[in-house]
Image (tube, rainbow, N blue to C red; front, side, top):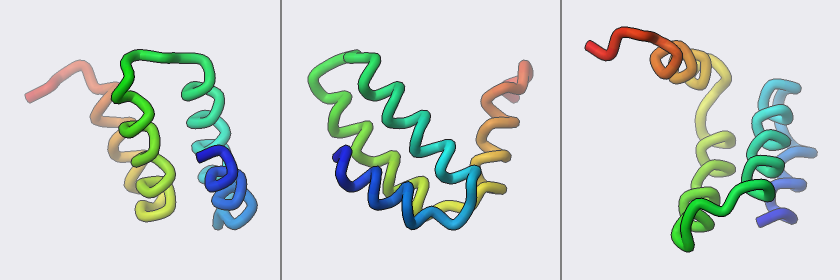
Length: 69
């Protein structure tokens, strides 16, 4: 997974996506929630590649919203 993330990092289309990959690697290395967390973490590089920065901005805004209507 680390090799794939470094390949994705070098091929990322923007500094914002590079930052997402850096955060993913550092958070994945620092935490061990459960044995299945590795499988979940493996999905994130695919999502970072698949979706654009505006998608993540919307997700961030919804997540940080205090109203979950």
